[in-house]
Length: 207
Image 1 (cartoon, rainbow, N blue to C red):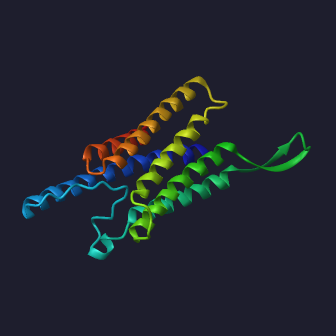
Image 2: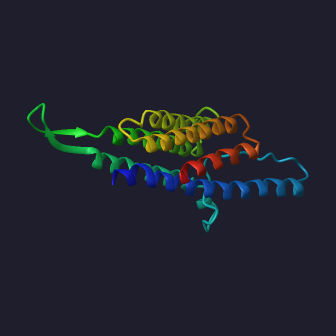
Image 3: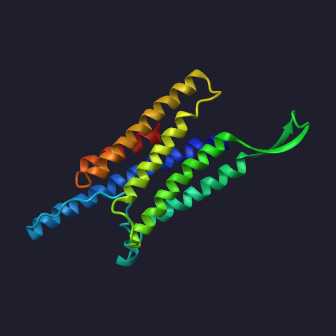
């Protein structure tokens, strides 16, 4: 259960969200180029960390950051799952009785989930037009990848050599996500930067 919550589900979500971002980015870039041709005025492509649902029947629903809400819900479920599976009531030989303990790995996963949940919350607040610093949604996602990379770097204790090697390569991939996100933050009008972050996220998901 812990492996499923900590590895399979997050990886699946990373891969699916990367595919979703790739599709929405292509549509957004197409519309920006098409609008430029019709109006004869340059309309720059602007990257985004979240997208509304293009298939919603009404314009008002298409303006709601459904993706951010969905990510927040998934993160909440992940945190609750890690909290339930991480809490153990086992015999403690030092105390000579059963005692409540919490598995360290689950705590690390909770911190990782929380960082991405915080980024999703900021996306929702930005969409609601709260007076937040410009580009903060990009910064919080950069922070989330940084926290994830830091945790996975210290996630190798007690593992066999093959598992350590696999997780080390994953850390490199997360570093790629971090660097690509920083590039996207500084070059928000470059679609190549956006797709670099998407490709890095997809690679992390399938890894």
